[in-house]
Length: 199
Image (spheres, helix red, strand yellow):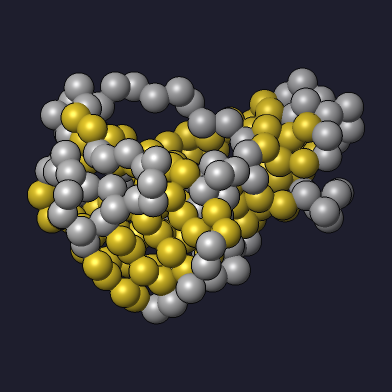
């Protein structure tokens, strides 16, 4: 298995996973599903957004993304989308909520709306939007809009799958809250796996 070494800022991307990791696997679109893991030191990192800049292949339609409001929290805490995607913001609490963002990405304010109501918003600009509710200050979440159809968010074990990436040399990016974003180059084929490591 080929190994890829890259160091940028305070992170390293290594082209192989620890024991038990999986290689890239062929996808029905002609690309590869790349599986990887994100860590800070030895600790697995959830809610890391990883994306790859590559030419778009034919992809199956994806489920419309939802940022839910329930139990006085946003779910999921981190949502990754492609630029141009419309996100739904349902309110499933029994109180009014408000969703707004004045961060670098999409700036908006959906206003107050009651339980059972759904607001929708199209993210037409790449970047990070940090979301809040002006009634409940402990509520916050992130939406990362990227100029690529190839992205994923790591789960509680730090693992992620970027689906359908075409073969070839591409640029990757990785972001997590409170840390600098990293970028680097990766050669994608059936042998490629990713480990994103903040040291």
